[in-house]
Length: 138
Image 1 (cartoon, rainbow, N blue to C red):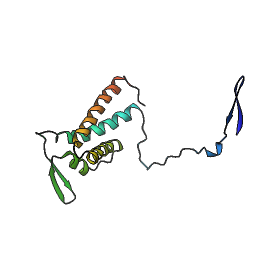
Image 2: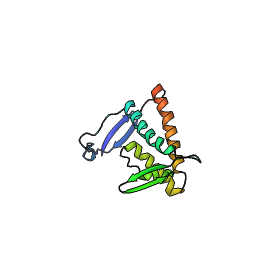
Image 3: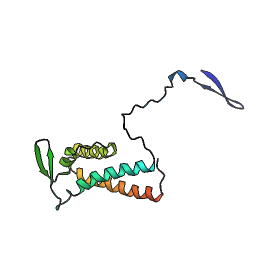
Image 4: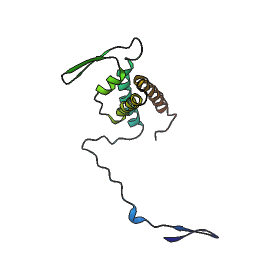
């Protein structure tokens, strides 16, 4: 350790650990989108809203059935959890909605559509704030 002078009448000790500092190296696949900022946040919200719009129509007593084909298997369901499981979502932000639905199903066993729709509504409001400039993108 080295001595560090902090001002009149004070002394402190600082550990020199420069050999522990490693540069951050991030490896990305070719063609990976590295955009950032407000535009990227809005793009992520739009991807999530696309998933929400699929699941939202299954909600409630007048919920519509979805005809889904997975390989050779055809399923007709209005269960939001089943729809979320069968959707092959690749977008990282939209995958979070799948994770929310799985966590809700594991903890409670019900309400998967509700949490996805609620998250979608919160994202819709956040998007409005971003577009109006009322919140800075982080």
